[in-house]
Each structure stands twice: as structure tokens, then as C-alpha cells.
Image (cartoon, rainbow, N blue to C red):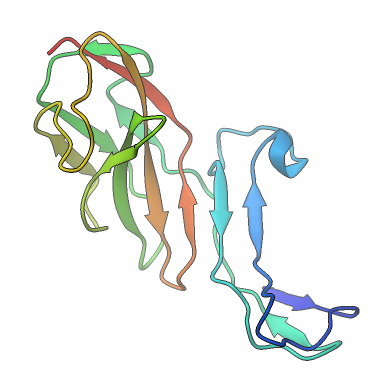
Length: 161
């Protein structure tokens, strides 16, 4: 029902907040299940009192099904990445590719209701160019209507150029 009790938590003093998080697989002590997102986080809970019951958010952990390219695909650039809508009212999607382990991710700039993204080249605006013939993980982040967000399962893609 989205309600959480904080029976032993001190009244919020500005130093700490609580956050409702779901993690699929061993990180969350759950069996890995591809029907669910890899992880989901609700916005932090800042306003609570000792022993109070607060709303931690109601959310759907259904996975964002990645359609194409297939896992471990070797493809030319530019390329179109597609996924299926979860069918949840208010969901917005944002595509990511892990550009470098040191620098971060290339991404679709703004989340939207789209279910595809055209990756136009191996260059990322603020990151080094992706290297051809190197595998890169890609995934979709779903932004829920209530402010939470989740990450789809990942696939790997290699660009030929």
C-alpha cells in the first residue's frame, strides 16, 4: 500500500532521509527475475516524526522490455534502439549507453513517452567518442509519475562504426 512505519527512527533533523528502494537480484536479496526492473528508487522521505507512518510511494517494478538491438548485437552506427512501453500511466523513458566506465553515460537528453531512440553516432556530447568494436551496455530508465525511477535490465551492443 506504499505506507512505511519508522518505529525506531528519530524525528527528521535535516541530516538523514529515508528512501524506498527495490533491487532485483543478489544486491536486493531477491532472486534475479527478468520480469522486473534491475532497480527502482522512490524520492527521499524527508518529512517524518518518530514512530510516524508515512507514504513511501506506490510503484510498479515491471521491467521495461528491450526490443532491439538484441543482446550482444554487432551493428553499424547510427542505430535505432527500441523498447516496449510498460503501459503504466505517466511513465517517461530515457535511453542510456555506458560510454566509459570512468566518464559516465551517453543518454537521451530528456525523458519522454517515446519507445525508441536514434543513436546518431559514436560521439557523446561531453564524453570521449565510443570506440568501434568495443562492447557497451545499454538500458532504459523509466521515470514514474510519482517521482521514482527504475532501470531496465541491460543489454550489450558493439558498433562496427
